[in-house]
Image 1 (cartoon, rainbow, N blue to C red):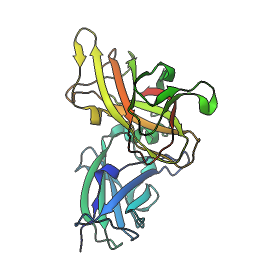
Image 2 (tube, rainbow, N blue to C red; image 1 turned 90 degrees about the vertical axis):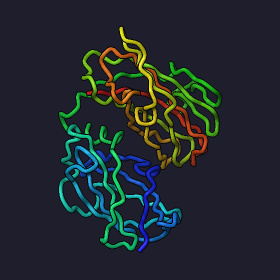
Image 3 (cartoon, rainbow, N blue to C red; image 1 turned 30 degrees about the vertical axis):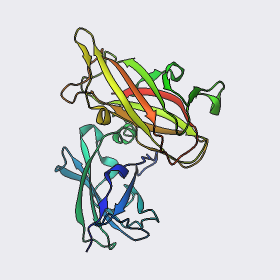
Image 4 (spheres, rainbow, N blue to C red; image 1 turned 180 degrees about the horizontal axis):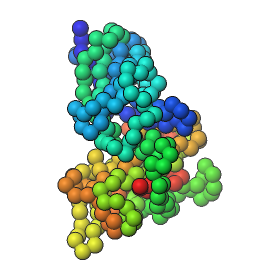
Length: 294
């Protein structure tokens, strides 16, 4: 039997939170066999476990599904919508993380699962967490989209309202934008800062905003920079199902140095750029940016 591999780069390629019960988490992955060949148009048995605390932590929720991969080897499931083995997805307390997803699979579509591995859920929990009444105060810092510093080419500001308002990023261009804010005094040191963006696109398909840099200016101390950009600054890939319809996406900001936490009063600067190899070739429009914290 061939072992199935799930590409890490495809895990959690898109996240959708349903406002009604039960809550669900959209999960996509590309399936390849031990010869690195795509497993296409074939039923695959999948077992998903949500682990608490660590990659070997307690499973607070387990379910199984049997999706069929498409012609590109892609499976698309909604965690929380499968056959429950144990736990209740809607009762997960996301404030008691970290949480990890463990994926097991059977390429024959059965239940002889092979453990593939685990990946930490970093940017996803906020939207689920915020749906649990009383769990989040929804403290927000609204950033001025029109105050973004633009570098490179292929971007512009809209000059109208509705679909013509916001920051526009063209496909295939060297376009990055920068923002900054000061962490409020009522922020709890070390908590995750979440980035909420409302965006639309003139075309359908997946669009990626990639981390460019992040830095922290700490009064009386100095500047904190490091190599933690890829994990300290994140926006999940955005899958636009319909052109010109705004969607909400949630990302996060962590300290650029893993041994240092963010503190109240820190001045944070960050930058994203649009991938020049997006499947979506339309113009990405960022209509609003917020920082949210507990």
